[in-house]
Length: 248
Image (cartoon, rainbow, N blue to C red; front, side, top):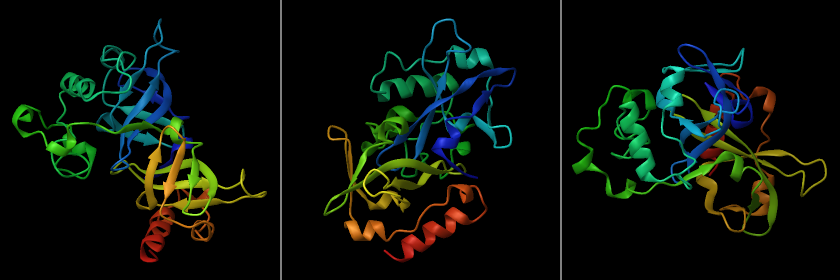
């Protein structure tokens, strides 16, 4: 399934035994552009609000019809999971505690987006007994960023700033961000929503709130528009990505 971040952050969360609030934000890896966590809004189901996260490993199903994320844990399991409130920014130590709590294999051990695997569900049954000796040297620090933060960053081409990041398109099989959407409305009246590949991105400047791309202004403006109404249609985003990659 392909879904946009704007849509996903309006989904409610259903645990095995009850509803548990909704998705508030999405944390992704700025090196691999892989979604690592869904941030749960706890205001509606915890007396004192605290931030907890849900790994895609825990997601059983996304139901677009009723905008619901079904997770394979109980309400109490999620309530008692480590909070990210005391871990800003999210540290690798926090992630290790979180994965030990749920008993999942570590995604940062191995060369793939999910450790040795391409998809997060393959880590569900994998235990982490071997992690002390096999941590991949390039995965010892994380690069987690929030969609809610990067959304709105200006896009800096090689010649000028053109528009801002307005949406992230996610393949929920691999939980990879396959496209970003650039809204040019704040730069050009009657602007467009243009397709940007993660591989187009040269750098994300957190201080300047810029996303620098390896494209000129003209090259970006010649990118195809993303039709929001077609994002969930079978093959639409895959075809768009294929066309963009073949023209690079």
